[in-house]
Image 1: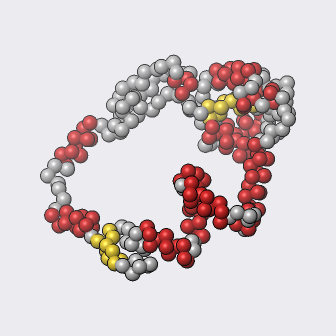
Image 2: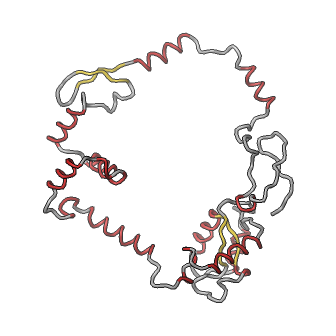
Image 3: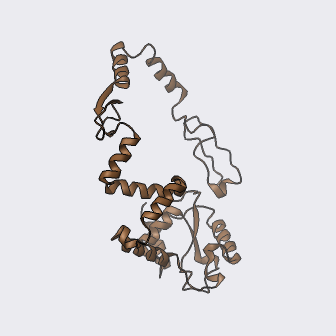
Length: 266
């Protein structure tokens, strides 16, 4: 890693002192505590002097108070009882209380959007409903198939699961064939040596990145002899690595593709 002088981006003129762990995490743009000091002290003083004596007028203060305290009178959809609500919640509020809301929806039935919201909340927090309510839901749907309850959604869910299963499945491969799971110690050593060779810098954007990755010039799966050779490795940051595979694909990669990719302007 080059140890040239790096100045703080806030404009204070101070030098960022080099530390050995920067080669792994990258050199920061600011000195600690300076990331919010993008303006100089002189500029801050000028802004402060300009703001002296400027206050909100009494008319604007009254407007703010009226907006905060303004109440709108609405009528409940279920019991026709009048109730007052704030201006912000007047567009969405329809019921006097939770009881009226439940009675109305139990009689009329929930809308599609409400059902989807309930499904999402159940997925995020399965213990949201009590044991009694879960038993009631179970008894109401007892004896029914998944297709009878959800209809066409059952087929869509099956397709999603199959596709996700295909993506994750690697097959009956040896431990050497799956380096990304941390099985192969040779791969880990090769990765460290490639980082050192390229001085911990992305070869596309020429920046010290926290998310530096080692890329095989010729594919790992097809070229077994070149798997752990340092000459077959190059460093890219996560963003540039994704861009390369988006352009040239995951298979049959060559050195010419990498040279062409590096020459292109980011």
